[in-house]
Structures are given as C-alpha cells and as structure tokens.
Length: 402
Image (cartoon, rainbow, N blue to C red):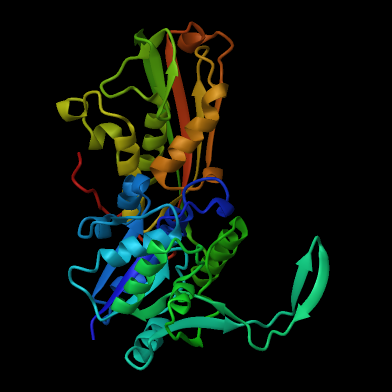
C-alpha cells in the first residue's frame, strides 16, 4: 500500500486577523505549517508529502520550514482551495500512490493515532474522512430570527485529513474543474458529487482548524499548558548611521523618499540593524559584525533583511521564538510616523511573527546632538525571546554565515 499526502497551504487566512497568512504564523516557537508537516513526515506509512502554497509565498515557505524546503519543492496553488488541491494531486500523477490523504495546513494538532486509524481503513472503503458528531443544538436562522431547529442526530462536523483512492479523487477533481461546478468546501464534497461513497470514522476533538484570531489564542494557551514556564531572554540593540548623498533612506526595509540617504557598508538600515543586534544580544551571540563582517565584500550593499532573517533563524534553530520587538527611531528628519505601519508589516514578514508582536515608533532629541543637527539617524531596539523550559538557547549553533 503506497500512501501520499497533499497539504493545502495556499490560503490567505483573512479571518485570522492581520499579519502573515495563518499557516506561516508561529505557535510557540514554530510555524503552524511546520507543526502540521512534522506529523506527516514522521509517520512511517506516509511515503510522500506534497505541499501546495500560494505562488507569492516562496520566501515564507522557506523561512517557515527550512529543512523541508531544502528537499521538497512546493507546488503552486490556484485561486481557490479546490484548484489548489487539484494542482497538488496532479503533482503526484507521475509516480501515483494508491491512496492519498488531503489535509489543511491550518490543522496542526492532528495526531499520529488519527493517521493510523485513517490509513487502517484504506482498502476497505472507497473514501473515508474523520468527523465529530454535533453536540450543540442547531438552529436555522434568517435575518437574526430562528426559523426552526434542525435534528442533530445525523449531523457531523467534517475534519481533515480526508483519505481517498488516488485515481478516484483525481478524476473527481478533474471532472469538477472541467464542468465548472460550484465551489466545494472540502474534498469529500467533490467525491460525493462524483458518486464516490464516503464513510466516516470518529475524528479527534483536538484536531481543530485555526481560522480566527481567537483560535490562535486558544492554541497558544493549549501549548502553554503542555509546555509551562518558558525561558525568557531579553536583548537590546543600538545603531547610528550618518547621512550621505542620495534620494531615500531605508528603515525597517521600507524606502522613504528623502533628499539624502544613510551611509553604511550594507543598505544602512539603522533600525533593522538595531533590531538584529538586539536578537543576537538576547542569544549572547555577538552582533552583526560577528556574523557579517564589514570587511567582507559579500555584504557590501546587501539588504539588511538578510541579517534579521539570519538572527531569527538562529532563534528558531534553538527552539525559541520572538516574543516581541520594540524599535525606536531617533531623528529630526525625515518624518517617520507616516511609514511606521508599513515598517511593522515588513518586519512581521521578515521575522515570521504576527503584527501584534512588532512595534515601531519615532522620536526626536529636541534638536540636541548629532540627530538634532540632522547629521544622521539613530535607532534602539529591545526584544524578548521565548524558549521551551527544556531548551538551552545559549548553545553554540551558528550556521556559518559569518
């Protein structure tokens, strides 16, 4: 029996609130996608996993699951979940499995036991999905008024992964795509429409899909209960760059039009440098110059997101996560406040953390000192890192970029 899995990770997750698409957000110290993939990758009866992502998310994918990205090329999805699943299935056509499991990346709490029970039914059933019986009373409502109460005895809430004979579900999806049928909300619906009998097994109440901001809060609380009392590290960073000739300054990865630029070996992003050094400081692992010496021409003119990504990668590699980052930009000119929202967004993207963990603000020195004389810009940053209680964040774990 050959079993493959298609992990659908191409959605945008708008209902989860601001920040990264939900599959790339951190839960504890690791991304949602990484937690989901680990369950499949570590299961002895799963032969191959195909991950379907949004074409715009290549960098996020590599950052969220670097080890996975180094050995498996993701498949680009479509505009709808249905299209993305079909593209994932098509990627398996060249070396087709006998069975396929289709799973939503935003369900990171599935268990090996659930996979065992699903795979154990394959061969006996044409298709099988996990589901939970509905326990609440269900009302049909129109315009905020109850119309009637629905008999819940035959109602079940479907979960993923959903298991099918590969050729059957591929043909069903291709038929649905060619007939331009209505959009289906799950793959069992496609199978039912195509005439495939779908059975259920009792699912897992913990196998919840992360959809809203509240779901993420509950998931964080769940992890905290299972891994109490994390270790914390606090770091600070400070940097200064003088003005030079030019037509823009770069702060937190955002280009701000101005009559001058900042002078530096790299792109002179003083704010991102301060943030990066704060993270290195919290790790007790040197500073930017330690990892990216200014004497090395490889880093001349390089974008500073390279430095920040490296620092965040060290945190993740040691089992931790960024708790929060707070940056203060100190200057008389240019005006910073119109750009802070985009700065926060850019830092959130680079670091792979939610927007509510990133703060950027600005102040002046009341025309005192070199910043007061508009000779340059300074920035200071503070960061909190969180590590599991059994983690050793100060171990030597550099990746050789220095």
